[in-house]
Length: 487
Image (cartoon, rainbow, N blue to C red; front, side, top):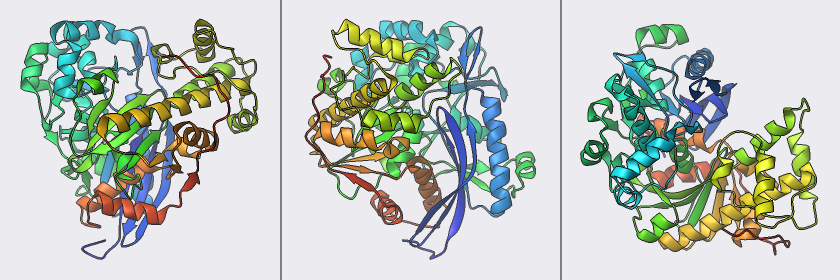
């Protein structure tokens, strides 16, 4: 596995939509081990102009986490950063112009209209291969353009690239995350599409050069190195900085006839391909083509994910009650009467707020029974997610030609035994669950390979994951009778 036959340690900064973490990854011949150093919340802030990420608090937590990592491992071989996609910070002469907007902010509707008025969605899809999501970066930047912000800013940096800039001073755009912006060609994701930028009036000068996973972004600035207690020679390495790209690296697929579900706040459901699928059928199904590590294509569909469950719990807790979610899921598993199923992809579920009320609204509109208890609501949510996952797997198979014989579930959702079993039941395909920290593992593996601790292609890296983490298997049962949903 290792050309040098040695072991080493890298630090993974892994930022999710609800929490972040800094982890140490110990890697070597036959060794892959994660050690948590710091976990911290990622709580957005609403101001009069909209919903924002608290990026300064995130950065403070990252610095504290790296300081803790340095105390344990003062000679880190590398640092890598991943996060959610599409969101960015605007800078002028190195100064951040404002807290980055949250993708759930409602401001981009005008940007969608402006973009599609210039480049119809069908034409846009033939270029960038991205499914329609109203918060894609292209729509956000169109909103910034119309507000005059792109006349002021000289640089736009996606969230992990912004953190890397603050650590190193370098300004780059990592390729897997750049592929989610809608501003690169799906068939050529190594550079920004100049023609598209010109048509949309987005200045190419604000977009930094694209780098590939495994490239060195830079080394720590002297002030940063002194603050965290690491040598200034410590490299920051580009990894699959879109968290799903890193998660897919660590999916222990041993054959190409497998689908993956990276399940956290979102459920990213798809297959890995050598080239994008840009057919009309793919566009109609709202499937996306995003860049993967080593030039692979992540052909997938975004499903609303565990957001449906977590935001419902937040709604219930607003009355001052503390919800025991594991206990509630156990009660949901014991529900034996059929429950209604709703369309987990309905856009009404995107914004924060009273999701149980919106779910009830959907069910009433479709003539379906509304759950009468919280346990039934949770069962309804999990059944609906399982159905959405199963549908997406089968559609990915049909559109790509991959005959899916196994579904790998990684991320936090892999711990939800009810969700995994129901997904197997509804898809009629075995589910293999784990590892939980797939994103951090993929982050660590790409760093370790880049600095020469290990070598090999993606299949070799995945084989190390498979040897290091024991999965849980779920065989499909005959599904219990549940009310299906009309799309």
